[in-house]
Amino acid sequence: MEFQLITDFFADYVKRNPRVDCYAPVIKNYPTCNCLKSFWYQVKPQHRPVINGVEKDPIDHVGYEFPGTGNAYLSEFVLLQAEVNSLKEGLWGTDPARNEYTLQDYAGWGNNLFQYVKNSISNIKYHIDPTIRGHLVRQKNRIGARLNLLENTYLNTYNKPIDGQQRTWKPLGLQAEWNTFVRGKAATAITQAFTLVENSLRALEDGYATPAQRNLANRGGPDAQNEKDFIAKIDALRAEWTNNRPTWNNPF
Image (cartoon, rainbow, N blue to C red):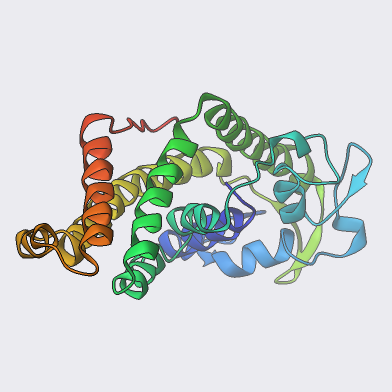
């Protein structure tokens, strides 16, 4: 889970709610983008909340709940192999299809495609590790609590001149919206992760372990042993996926 999710969350909220009643005194059906810009992004210094001695724009206070060098959550950082990390970002990002483009790039390179399948499985195992699941749940909860705190303790006390009148923020229930958003993102990530392994493993078998290729390898020749060894690796990977398939339940 990363800061980009905050941006994606607000973008998703705007898409689903293009107009809201976000001010008090109320302005009915005000453009949601204008509401958020007024109170959450690049606000004046007097409207930047100070929480635990730290002054930031409201949206940066939300992002501050992710692990970083300036807070108490640095221990939640996990070092991943580069492609596993890229796969993780693709699943949680706004463009999961980039994983499919990577698969297409690797389709003509057997060893790369083989490693891609293994990394895709590792990506699933990363997410189901009990420690990682705990980190993700805590991050989700912290961010929800911070949204709630900002809406109900800080932003609703700042007066701003909007449409000729002093107004404050009217809470929108963003904590509940966030919880729903993350639960949906996780459900999508789970489905896509398993589909990605199935598709890439099938592409590996179709490209390098067809019955015809097995027959050629068994007949011998200059590259026969290498081909047989690679087919055996593919078969072992298929057996691992079939017999020891991980279970990834939505933790949210």
